[in-house]
Length: 375
Image 1 (spheres, rainbow, N blue to C red):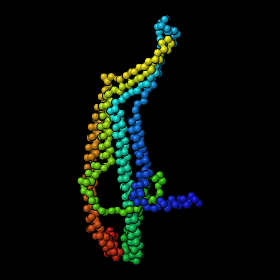
Image 2: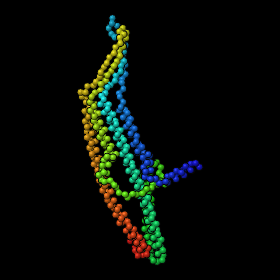
Image 3: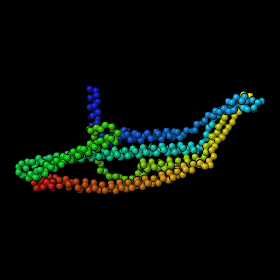
Image 4: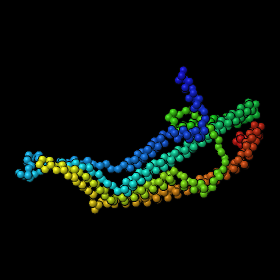
């Protein structure tokens, strides 16, 4: 009984139409691609943590002059030995510019991961909004097809009476029946489009099970855009996530170039050691060793050149994306202006006239003054 009540409650909840904000909120929380993309940020943070770490010291343990061949080391016989035990610590000192460069590169990668996530959020919101509008349009199309079918069913009923009364030719009656069947097929197609739109929207929302009773609510606004084309372009170049991503990638590329330049300097390893001699010497001493590679052949030339070319390439890609955004805004603005003019014409002129023509033809056809083709 308890499970029956829970199932009934879940079904009732699923039938409550959702608004656009509710759909977007659920999609941002549950979309599987976005959930996977979100993990890139903590991964990048972990790499920043790793880049901040300093190198570990090395423990040095050594034993020299061991009498493994039973030579009986002595100053009186062979003047060999004595056995010497060494313990020490070796620590590599890296230049500050290397460590800071490594951190800057890691932070740049983190900034890129954050911008990529914001870009994924934007793309998801666009896709969800498109699927939401498609579902609203599918619902309107289904309602319109049902209304048309109902109207033609009424015409078929009237034609049947006129045909039986001998006031209408059989071909006209059959033609109206065929038209009614065609509208019935349109209803089925509209219903199929409505189901497909529901499935696509629920998939974007991250739902693993699709509810046939899922529904949304909303109205289409015909308000115009207050912003000008220049203000929209300025906002797009400033706020578009893909532009910001490439801009951050350029900063990361610059940090990588500075890091590769810093790697030309070799690290210095300082080793401090303690020496203990046994047998007949019995002496304690200390020592310091400084080790540094000589940058004669490998001066990191290849990576330095690679980082420079990578920076130039990233700068070119940034200009390319900015050009694409300008073209996209220009195209969208032209499309909006055309759609705006068409909508104004439909609302102010065409809609009322088309309604009157439809009512006139419908009335004339019912009175036998217009043909079925005209209807």
